[in-house]
Structure formats: structure tokens, C-alpha cells
Amino acid sequence: MAEPIPAQKSPYAVDVTAGKKYFWCACGRSKGQPFCDGSHKGTGLAPIAWDAKVSEQVYFCGCKSTHTKPLCDGTHNAL
Image (tube, rainbow, N blue to C red; front, side, top):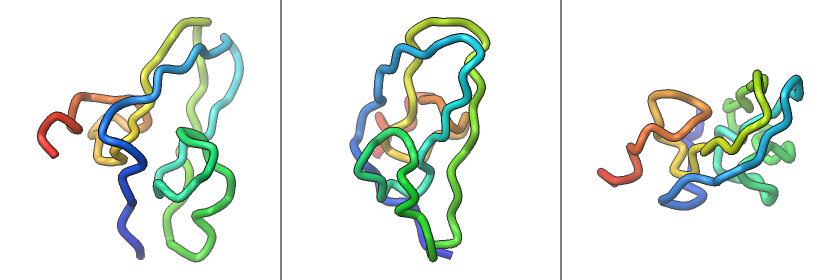
């Protein structure tokens, strides 16, 4: 299995819509960060599905090392 590639060393601020499902890129290879575009094929990595419970701004992890996937937990500050 391949290791994820950090897409950036900061989170992605995204306005999400309540009731919508989002697929976070866990591999770091997607051209449509922070979301999956299928670039993980053959890596052994897969996107993480996340359901928005309320409409708000959330911070999706960009470094791919968060312990609270798919949301940022500040791990990028230690990289």
C-alpha cells in the first residue's frame, strides 16, 4: 500500500451543505483537493466519506496525516 502524499501543509476551508456527503481524498493525489477524483486507483488507499450534519465552514485536512480524518486536527503544525 502506498503512503499518502501531503497535498499542502494547511487545511482546506470548505463551506459544506447539511445532508450532503463528501468524499475526502486520503491519498493526496487528487487534482480536486480536498476531494477525491479517483487518482487513488492502484494505491491501496481509498477516500473517506463524510456527511455534513449542518451547513457550516469546516476544515478538511490537507497534509493527510490528521488523526481525525477527514478533518484537520493541527497535525500539519508538527510536519
